[in-house]
Image 1 (cartoon, one colour):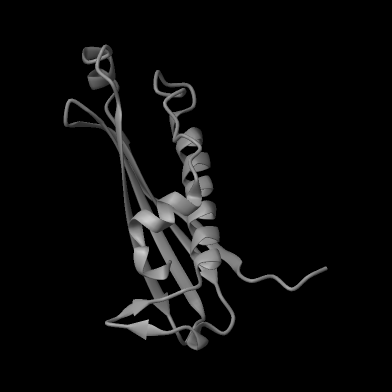
Image 2: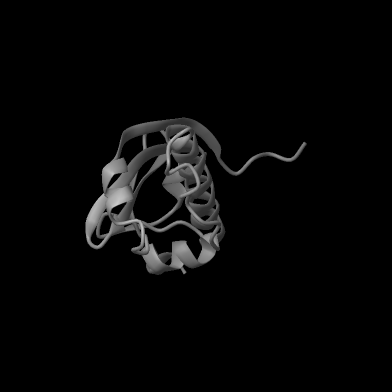
Amino acid sequence: MPESILSVKRIKAISFSMDEMLYYAASSLPVKVELQPKLGYQMDANTVELTLKVIYLKDSAELMHIQVQNLFELPGLREFPVEDHLLKLPSAIITLIVSLALSHTRALLAVNVAGTPLEEVLLAVVDAEDVAKRFFPYMF
């Protein structure tokens, strides 16, 4: 079995909320989705953390949100450059981290909205590389 590039250390839903009444009141309005990533690292622990907050809006009011902490172990983290406190990972690694974080967030959101009117309002499958380029362009 090939050696893994990184491993998942923790997946944790930090916060979740939804407003079912807003969903009913504004059912004809489209849902807008915003992603808010926060990337951190601990060199001594060889860990990279991507906390991803997903906010669903209807007419600029928050319909629901979920915030998920994704902690990854990345052996040899010190080998990657840091410039102005920004860790610069290879594009393939940040894309993998973003892909996993999106998947974890989608799964935890599905669990939280199961059995509610919002159970079919899930995070769409998107190109993780496009998302990574949007939020971390300095790694490409």
